[in-house]
Amino acid sequence: MNRILAPLARWAVTLSIVVLAVLVAIWLWRHYETDPWTRDGHVRADVVRVAPDVGGLVTSVAVRDNQFVHKGDLLFVVDQPRYADALGQADASIASARATLEQAKRVAKRDLALGDLVATETHEENVAKVATADAALNAAIAARQTASLNVARTAIRASVNGIVTNLDLHPGDYLGAGHQAMAVVDMDSLRIEGYFEETKLRHIHVGDKAKIRLMGDERDLEGHVDSISAGIADDQSKDTANQLREVQPTFSWVRLAQRIPVRIHVDRMPRGTQLIAGRTATVTIVQPEERKAQPQKSTQPQPVANAQGPRP
Image (cartoon, rainbow, N blue to C red):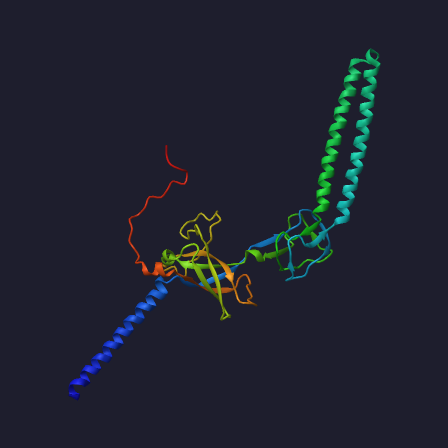
């Protein structure tokens, strides 16, 4: 009996090992090839490049590096006294233009009172002087509005709620108009962007729940799929004059699946989580149970709707 059971036991053990190996292989294949998850995720945020609209010496800097600022907070001031003087000159120009206009109007009115005693040519010249003085006054008023706008824009304020970063600005520095002075990371725009292989996109839908784990942090963050990128740059095309994201292939000698950016909105995160733009994250899409239970059906290709509307 033992001689019969011993070979059967060996066969059973061998068969069990083979079945287990097949099951492990299937699980690994599904986990790495079909399950919607990626280690290639990053924390992203919009960055506001702060630059003055007017040039001049920096009068004062009201913030420090890595300081949180609210929308409307003062960041720095550029050469306010100089532009205030220009505003005063604009006020003086308006006063001068208004006086000239009033004088021209009095002369024209006097011509009308004298009637035929004033030559027609002289009267026409005086009327033209009134129109010219009125145009000069309007130009002076417009110049004053520009000078007032310049004074207002000498004080540069935060346009978003965020954190000042890469600050290297000091009183006495000279800034040209449009020259970037600092950057503010928009904290209201923080999100996770996961780069998923295109073979896994059929398992990802807008609204799906997602679990995020930042590198170096064992706690999970909760979120949902906010959107899927509409396009990436074609690495085979020489035309790069567009705004599409460039995703470089890992190898050039083997055809790999392209990675498509998927934006994840963070819904909840543990207290004290450091959500810093640029951090690496692992993103796992949680598929609804009803979708998991449904087998993947092969469908016939559907016609693509014309983006310009139906043909007549």
